[in-house]
Image (cartoon, rainbow, N blue to C red; front, side):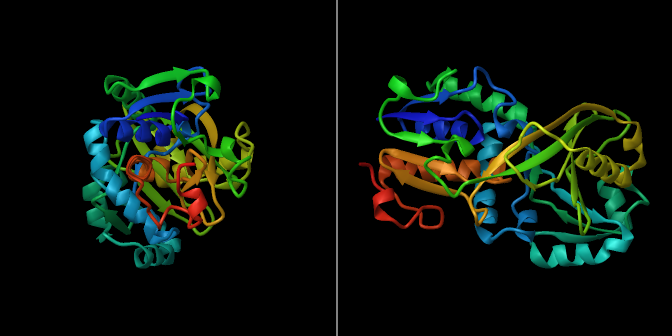
Length: 334
């Protein structure tokens, strides 16, 4: 079967690979002229943290994320699986207690255990949680690796186009907010990030610092690079990072470790993530087009599991009630 996948972010690349693995003749179309900041995947944190996400999301995200972890190990050698560390400052200890109650697959840490995991944080936190089965990756390196792998699997990749006469066969649409004319309940949620260089500091895993107003995460990217993020703003404006957000993210990183006060700021960026009202991902048939959308802030976490479902829905006619609409007219090829 010939299939067209539109959108070369993490969802589109995952779908293209899953389709190709099942013998489909796949072409991947992307309206941008080249891989890069046009995709919200470019600004992602890259945390593969299904059990941490239980704190604010339903069990579906944890289920999809847990299914996706083996896929990442197989498809991207740069995947690091040595867990997530969650800490909080002394005055916010109740936040850590609540986080532990809402999540799972973690063990509590005292000050010595925190220091054993992350020596650079020795003496800074009296309590923490370790989610040992979670991981992280560099989204930009992962996107490049998936693109190379897709081409090696026979996927035809076309940049600078997203439809028209080039479309062949049924379509899997992974265009995010660009699909809002059809998926009218989509909304944009902006995330802002900093990329810092601090060779003097070493962290082995993502560190989440809980705070009642602005929880922050710091993700090591290797070679002294760290991504700092956490903002979630109801906004479609991807190009603007506010001074307040910048100040809050830098202050939170400094509170994690004062060495961040000497870090070099390499990049300030933002991306708008597509979300449905319930913040859950969805597969929706519209004629011969299957939309994979609403990944919210969980793109890299859940994309592989969604891609498997999308490929099986298209090629085998399967229906996955947890992520697909119940209207039969939206579930079948026209």
